[in-house]
Length: 138
Image 1 (cartoon, rainbow, N blue to C red):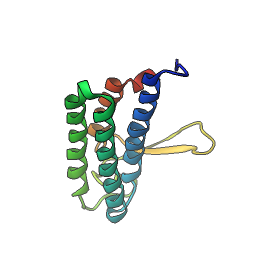
Image 2: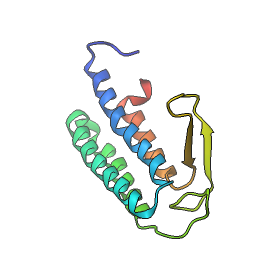
Image 3: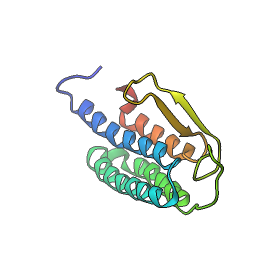
Image 4: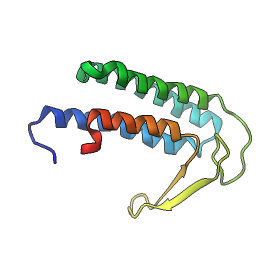
């Protein structure tokens, strides 16, 4: 439960914003053409830069480990952004793995399409960052 005046809760909320945006980007690039996803990858790298500045300010003691996770995310983004090969319809536009669409039970966004392959590492590193910054307790 969040405390109204807890700086730790506010810091975790801010960290959740960075983590959430990176995860949303992972759902976007899998369905976009090469040039559209180039912009998404660029925005992801900008988000990583902002996240590192945030982590350095609010998580000084653990910054080297946290920065390492963000650097691994950047490495994975840079590897994925270079891929430009033909894919099958209904498959990820990056890695050609089958896409999975499921019902979200949210009226504003009734379905969500994801790739369970190429963003896997990024999502794992983001999950590590969520644990280390207290986001998983929100």
